[in-house]
Amino acid sequence: MDYLQLAKTYKTPLYVYDLAKITDAFSEMKDAFKARKSLVCYALKANSNLSIIHHLAKLGSGADCVSIGEVKRALKAGIPKYKIIFSGVGKQDIEIEEALQSDILFLNVESEEELFRIESIAKKLDKVARISVRVNPNIDAKTHPYISTGLSENKFGVDIEQAKSMYIFAKNAPNLEPIGIHFHIGSQLTELEPIKQSAQKIAELAHSLLALKIDLKFFDIGGGIGICYTDETLINPYDYAQAILGALYGLDLTIICEPGRFLVGESGVLLTSVLYEKYNGKKRFVIVDAAMNDLIRPALYQATHEVEYILKGNRESHTLTDNLCDVVGPICESSDYLAKNIKLPSLQAGDVLVLKNAGAYGYSMASNYNTRPRPAEVAFMGEDVRVIKHRESLDDMMRDEAELLQNYEDSKCD
Ligand code: LLP
Image 1: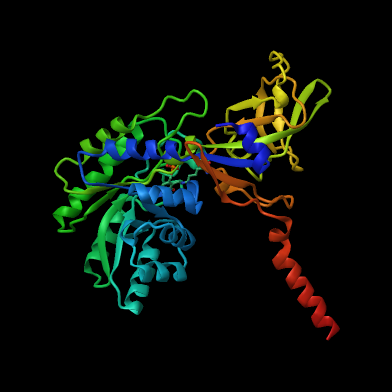
Image 2 (image 1 turned 180 degrees about the vertical axis):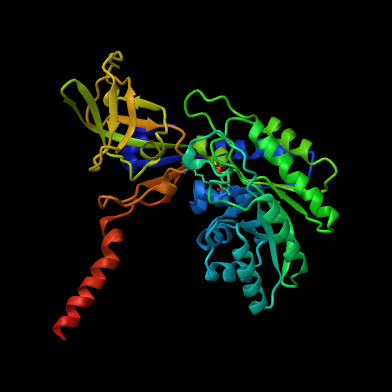
């Protein structure tokens, strides 16, 4: 793809997604589990653009959602209700109610109190709520602490004993139907062993539930498979599937997996234009038009996104100097950087940098900090490029506040 041309046509900062890569990643994941009945439920939080979800819906994907907003996005993008699950530690009553009204596949329950709440809402609506309990296996996923979720020190899920008593309660509650069991130990996982151990632990629990005549249908293994940002060794989806399938011996359960990053991460890049170069003493900075509000992963997790450069006007590429630079944005925070200590040739205004593997947790974590409009998004399939989200305008950002201010001022004049 001609990124320089895209930058010219659509301006920067710009997210660009290659839909073919999403198709390939989806097929790879689906094929890995072909020995069993399985459902891939794309984790919308990674990238919740309707066109991206719609692309996955056409491939047969379901959706893993963590807010009623995401449930509505999934439905709008064409994911059938019977392929939608709703997870999250803090579901509000209205969200539970709307999820039950929407008749989605099931809700992943993360605490005993939440289970009681779901029961009473289901009773009020005269519905039977299909549920699955998120079990926290207390296993170290060996990833960045901010995205590790499977230890008891993390807020997610319940321990095995509590899960058991929740299942017994649910079995005896006329408005609850326990149909699944769930775990998710973290994101950007690069080691298989913790997943394997978790699957074994949760499968043991499923066996003991079976002995209590609690016959589940779904084994939801969460998401978390990592992608290559720098030189990580990766989990192969086939080995991943084998590790899970090995744990399920003797259990007739449909596997649900909830990949986010794996499906969309490598499909996306963030294009940004160089504004200036400057030196503070010996320290070299390349200042670009994207910032931490557009891509917060480096600031938040010290994440590395490989950077490629495109020099405008077919300039001869300079050799890389030893003068390492930081690529930084215009935001008033020292943590506003996109890359640190990398080699780049000397750059001019208008040269374009390509931040790679930005398809997951890029746009979906973008904000308006410093009153910066969020970027545009385009997607391409072969040569066919289309805008899937317009760049926000300053008007978009201020309309509501301006109206409220105007109303207030007007009311004072009355
Ligand atoms: N299922 C559950 C219950 C989750 O909490 C998550 C991610 C996923 C599935 C999808 O995980 P994935 O396959 O994408 O690893 N903002 C962070 C990642 C946060 C992940 C939160 N949960 C980042 O930029 O690395």
